[in-house]
Amino acid sequence: MSNQEEQSIPATSEKIIVAEDSPPNRKILVHLLEKLGYKVEGCENGEKAWEAVQASDNENLVAVISDIMMPTMNGIELLKNIRESDKYKNLPVLLVTAVSDKEYILEAKSLNVNGYILKPVTFQRVTGKLSELFPDKKFPKMAA
Image (tube, rainbow, N blue to C red; front, side, top):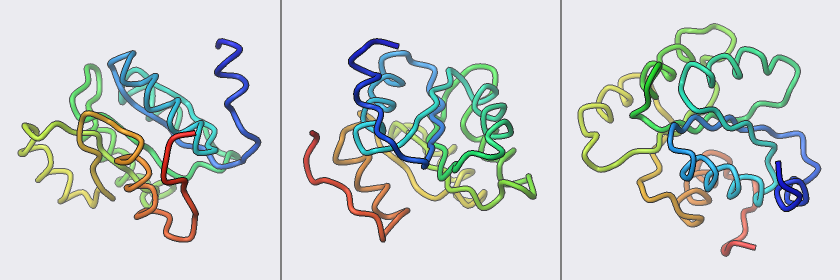
C-alpha cells in the first residue's frame, strides 16, 4: 500500500468488499470508496471475495460490490453464495456491469441484487447507488 492510499483511509468502522478482476478497475473502486470513508477490501475474484465475506465476522461489513464477469467465481455465483447463507443473506450487494450483461442482470434480479453500477465506474455512479442503499448517510456531491 502506498503512502497516498494509507492517508486516504479514514477512521470508520464500515467496511465494503470489492470483487473485481481488472486491477485498474479494482483500484478505482477501492479508491472511491475509501474517499467516501469506508474501509475497503479489494479481491481479484468472487471466490476471494466470498472468503473475505466469511472472514469478516466481527467487522462492520455493510456491502459487497462485485463485477459480474470474473474468473474462478463470477459476480452472480458470489451473489448466490451470499443469498444462500443464513448469516449473510441480507447483506447488500451491488453488481458492476456492462450493458451487454443482460442475461446476467435478469439472473441477478431473481437473486435479489440490491442494484447495479454501470461501467465505466464513476464517482457519481458509486455515490448514487450507495445513497440508494443507505438513504440516511450523506455523500458528497463531488470527488474530494
